[in-house]
Image 1 (tube, helix red, strand yellow):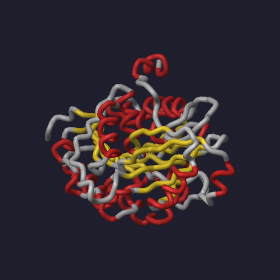
Image 2 (cartoon, one colour):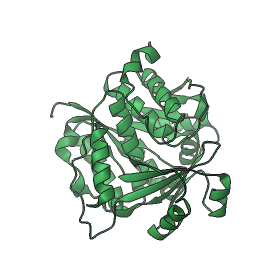
Image 3 (cartoon, one colour):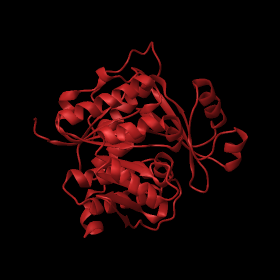
Image 4 (cartoon, one colour):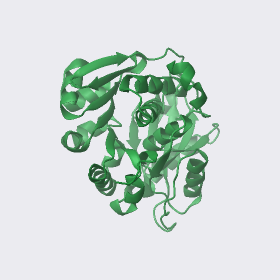
Length: 332
């Protein structure tokens, strides 16, 4: 097997995030499902952007797994990222922003005559809740042929986002990564991403979790929904039957580390949140960085909790700067 020189191989939707702070009235008036990710067409997203023309909008390269990969780089780690962009302005912005963030993103963009690079409008209300309206664009055409298996073989972990499960081609690409990773002795990690995916693809997620996954990332609602358990303890026990390691985030309580049939709470950090978008992504990035560097799961979870606590204190799905210099102070 090739030497494992790189920490994580990430696969996800390559989306340009457009960030806006809005009122509750804005979300209500536009009949958006508050606090979730909703898929919209270009016309719907364009209408929302038109109504936001007087707002201060920010742009970042994003997508759930991409945010996790950036958190790994900001922790001092390394990674490759696979996602589909178009040969358009947003696609070039995305590529440059990922490279500047420290993550390799050497992909072949699709012709500009096809679908555009995906965009995600992230609406954050005063209570720090985020509501996402996503136009997937060309990202729905991510396929197994876009996956660089030579690069995957050089990584310690593969990380796949659950949002890829909706369109058929990205779903096939995700499965191809999992299958190849098992052959190449690369640990497979998966994030469930959103409760609505558990409703639509529950049987699929249960199957791939048991068949391919070494590590699962999810929140308490996703864990209970997928396992059918009435409480978090029951969900943790069920997940431990499927995977060797699971991290179940539980808001300000921190996270449950589930391993070998046992569940341990790793406490979170108390902060004043202004924007919760990206908290789970940053957490996964911190954990994967720690695991790839040999941390025990509980120690990795502490670092993940810290990154999540910092990302919610400002607008946007990622930290504004590297944090590797803080590791010794935080972890002791």
